[in-house]
Length: 194
Image (cartoon, rainbow, N blue to C red; front, side, top):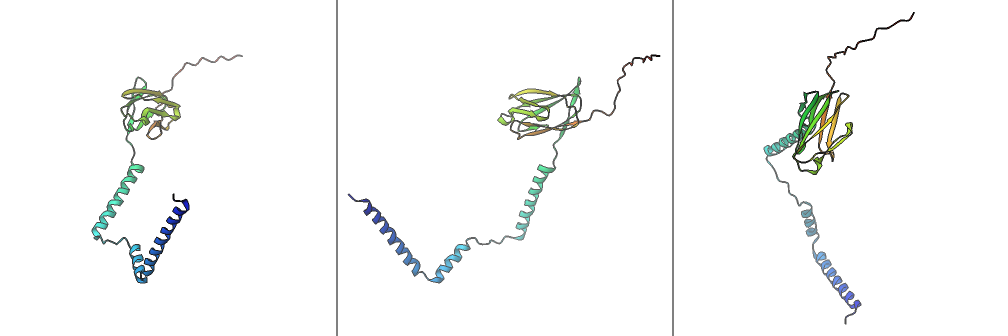
């Protein structure tokens, strides 16, 4: 049998022989040859000259795409949908398919609001709807209309989100009509005691 020390010694001698052989090959290479190979390695990428019109077209299209992204994410406003009032309830149909459509709903303060969510998207993210300002969290069954009712008391903007807070919508509550009709209540005549 071969001992472990013989195997380790054999591997070490082969490694030493290969190291010496490669060192002699490097030592035999001229100094100019080594500099040339180093320069070739550093300059792997060669500059390719492009026509000026092509550089301009790429620059303009890149700036156009940046402008489109800025407009889309920062400047575009979602279309708002005003709720229709029927029998004292403001109602809006909202489609739940890859988000909320319409995603901005305009209602009046002090009146009951009914939002009818029709979910057709099987995504698990859209299974739930949350109205944090009104303390409402409701499951939205697939292919069904789920009504959610609440009464906003104060004007302002209130967000609603999916269960994972990825999709959003806004309820814009406007003040009630400025035409205020005072309710007349009979006042009992005052009696004075003498």
